[in-house]
Structures are given as C-alpha cells and as structure tokens.
Amino acid sequence: MGNLWYGGTIYTMEEEGHRVNAIYENDGKIMAVGEPNVLREQYPIEQEFKFDGVMLPGFIDSHLHIIGHGERLLRLDLTYSQSREELLKQIETKVKQLEPGEWLVAEGFNENNWDNPKVIHRNELDAISPEHPVVLTRVCRHALVANSKAIEIAGIHNQTTTPEGGVIEYDEDGGLTGYFLDQAQELIKEYMPEADQAYLEKTINTSVNDLLSHGIVSGHTEDLAYYGGFQKTYEAYQNTVGTINNFRAHLLVHHEVVDDFKQAGYNTDQRDDWLEFGAMKIFSDGALGGRTAYLSQPYADDPTTKGVLIHSDEELYDLIKKARAYNMAIAVHAIGDAAVEIIVEILEEIPAPEGKYDRIIHAQIMRPDIIKRLTQLPVILDIQPTFVSSDFPWAIDRVGQDLIETSYPWKTFIREGILCAGGSDAPIEEVAPIRGISAAVNRQSSFDGNVYLPEESLTVFEAISLYTTKPAMVIGKEDRQGKLKPGFFADFVILDQDPFEISASDLERVEVKQTVVGGHPVYNK
Ligand SMILES: [Zn+2]
Image (tube, rainbow, N blue to C red; front, side, top):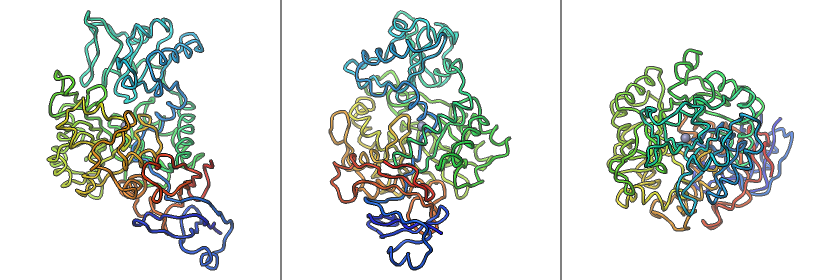
C-alpha cells in the first residue's frame, strides 16, 4: 500500500513547464504520476497527503562538506561578524566559557565584510586569550589565524620551513602574524584536538537535519580525510546517513585516504541508494580571497603573485594516474584559470574511465580557450552560483577587468554543452539551494546590490536543474533521482511559492515548507 500526494502544483522537471496533479509513491519510490482520481482507482492507498504549495524534486547539493557544515553549526560561527571589534568580542565571550587547556576553534571570518579589511593579527587574539589556543578559520577554509599559544603548541617559529603549496605570513620585522595559508594550515591543524566517533556522528546528524530543512535530500560531500582517518569517518557516516537519517550521501574520496579506502575493500562501482563513494578528490590551487587561486597572470591587486599550486605538475599527473589505476574519476578543486588549464592538459592525455565524469570543482576564473577544451572532455563542472553574490565586486580587483569578463560564466558553460551541477561548498557558503537558484538567475552582489555579467544569468528552469536533474546525471543516477517520475526516489521539496511564476527578485524569499525523502516527511516548517 502506498501514499497519494496532491493538492498543489507539481513540477516534474522532466522538461520545462511539465506538471502533473498527483504522485503515488510506495516503498520509497514513485510508482505513478497523473490525476488524483485516476490514481485512486488504480492503486491501493494507505494515506493521502494533501499539500499546499509547489512540489519539486528534492534538491541535491553537488559539492559540500557535510561534517564541516555541522561543525560550523556547532562551533562559534564568525561568518556574520560585521567588524573586527564584533569578532574579537565574540571570541572573548567564548574564551571565558572554556575549560583549562581547551582549544577555541571558530569558523568563517571574512575580513572583506569589514570597513578595515585587514586579517586579524595573532597579537589581537593574544590580548583576549593568552592561555587558550585559538584558531580562526577563514570563510574560504584556505587560511587560518592562530594565536601565540596555538603556534607555541604546534612548535612553529620564525625559521619553520614553509610547506610546499602553503604560505606563512610574517610582519615587516620578521615576526609571525599568525596567518597561515593553504598547506601551511596543516602545521597548526596537526596539533588541534582530534574528533572522536561520537563527535563525528553528532556533527553529521546536526548537518543533515539542517540540510533537510533547506530542502536538500542528497549531497556529494568531501570529508573522509580530515577527522582522524578514513575508517572512523566512514563508520560515522554508516551509523547516521540512511540509518538514523533519511538522506543520500555520495562521498568523494580524498587522495590521501584512497589507499585506505581500497585496502578496506571498497570501490566506486558499488552503488547504493543511501551511501556510496564517488570520485577521488584533489586540490590543485587555493582560493581567490587569500590570492592563492592560481592565475595565468599576476593578481591585479598584488602583482607579486599569481597564486599557489598545491602540487607540482608531475605530482598531479601521478595522482590522476593513480585514480585511473583504481578505475576512479577525479574531482579537482581548481579556481584559477591556470589551475584549470593544467588539469585539462592532463585529462586530455588520461581522461575519465568509460561511463564516468571527472569533476572540476569551482572553475571560476575562466578563459574561452579553456572552455573550448573542456567541451571535448568527459568533465563536469561543480559550480557554486552563490559565489557570484559573495565574490563581486572584490573579485574584479583580484583578477582584473580582462579576466573577470570571461569568469563565472555559467550560461556560457551550459550553452557550450558542458554539464554543470550546483552546490554550496558549505560550510564556505550557506547551504540554501534557494539562494543558489536566485544567485544563478539574478547574479546580484550581496555586497553592493549590483548585477554582474548579466548575460551569464540562467533561466529559473536551468537554475533549478543545477540542484535536481544535473547532479543526478553527474553520478550516473539520472534514472532514479532528480525528477518526479515513475521509478524515481520519492524525494520531494514543497515550497511556499512558485519559482516559475514569481518575479526573479522574489526568488530568494521562497521558503521550504516540507521535505520528503523516500516517501517520509523529514522536515516540516
Ligand atoms: Zn569544497
């Protein structure tokens, strides 16, 4: 016996404008769609769900860090600090609540939101926390600030060798500022207290509950390498996702744990409706905020640097070769055009295994010649539409007028036939797909309200596809996920307004009323 859903507008996402009036689902899958009365005659019905509003397939986030998002929810969140004074006040309050010797790790500061956009100096942290080690991670997660206590515990001093692919920042007089970028962050992170199993499970549960409240029923997540090893982190997932949480997780496997993953007997060809493995994750460059994304030309606002490469070309080649030996696709973080170009060069020689897509995550700074080469490869792009609202206008200062004009080119990608999926990169950005959809359509800066590169705006249908049909295609699940169609998962989101009917400027105010996974209501507003 199954259930009947009807009452509101139902967009199937099979094609633009396609609607039905009812869905019949049983045992987690959609059995039939059509008219309520016809379905009542044809099928035995256990329960009827009459809803108000607009139903779409449940959203899928194509790139996020589920544990990192949970940590952001559980830890002190600095994302909304409007000034350095406010941030330091938040830290000071939190430090007073700590047990002796306890670390304070706070998340998400962004100096670009302040009047005086200067990164916090360790001295400022020492003044409010001389005893407790304090670490503030930057919103991009490609940089952190540590106070002197944390630096002392990590045994770092003026003569410490800078790790490859990293930057240690110094004052004019040669003292440490406490700012560590990209790989240099590891010097501190190695000494931070390790997460235990219970903590990981709590973090995943907290994260997933929040995702469900935003209508997200599935996510492609990358966290297996950061929390004390593959096995422990994977077990935390096994004990939560699809077990106590109705959520579908597709886990990218960081190259540092890929051998552990293989030795434990797993591979990416084992498919599962709830929990499965995906491509091998590699970082190729840093991020734009800290000027570590790798560009083809010097930064417009700092001509001394073009950015940072995490691996040499040879290392990168060997990593991709290794993925191929394991019959795996790769998922590479690449933000700068030169970083993407290096990847493209290697992929032209050793493309993804038959039937799989390599993924380039972010692909923000672009050039037409690279886009042309991408169209010839089995490569998909994991884009983050909200980066347009967060990065403009300061991204123009970073890369210069020439390069920005061909960057964040979502419409061009789609027109050129490159498969794109939409994600949040949470905890870097808020998880809300509604905000992503609005950003893809409106391309409006949340900083100055201006619209940037409006010719790259997507239609509402294209924007919603980024969070439904497209991520399903990326992982070969286009036959069961991302549409409301017989044989597909009974995963729905019910919205309070019709995104296809309201004006574009109202999109970001659409709210999620209900989320349903495998036929079970898992979130109700
Ligand atoms: Zn990421």
